[in-house]
Length: 251
Image (cartoon, rainbow, N blue to C red; front, side):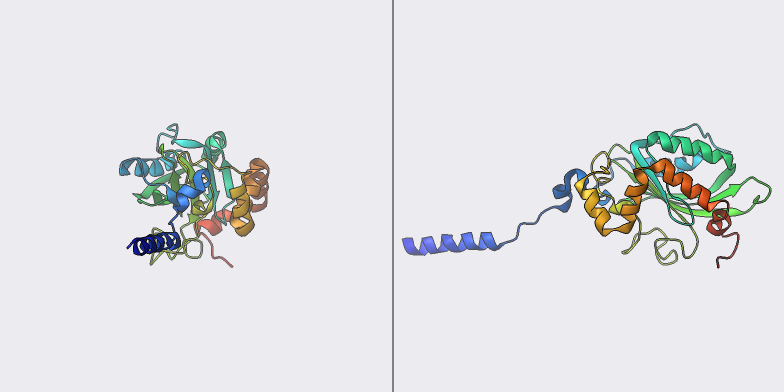
């Protein structure tokens, strides 16, 4: 009887040892977690309000002095034909928000929605510029907003809302809810910790950059944000507007 009991205990120990223990990748990543590790902490209205409110900073018909809840290291990444990293850090994004007022515009057409997976805020908007050359010509934009647990915006990501520019099939998946969406926000280590604060010099960021050219490009630009942004502005000139807004055919 004793031998049988001992054998049973040994068998149970073996079974227990051979059963793999599931590890939560978000918990294991710690401060380097990806944005998809976060769940909404605010009500739906908060995410919709500030996703739309971001555009007030550029809308001549809105109260442009209302400051969105930007985080300390907020980044704005705008895919070509726009200029990639167009702001990094709280003060820099405020400065570039003000700079964009040099291109007077209104954004009357806005469809901003909440999603329970990051990015929590996603918008389809149309800019209308006030200069004589472009008056009445809309510029459609698809933009996404990542938030931290405090409800602050940590990452802004934008695309021209035109075929060939979007990170997904705009017809079949208009809000980027399916598999294979090529957004950068979900690939940046650190956006998934409670504060959404990244470490440009951390080991996780270096590993991500080694395997992902877009992450590597972000790190390069973020380490010298003003110089890379200025170079991109000079190289693009005004040519990006007709292409990105759909005002001329792409070759």
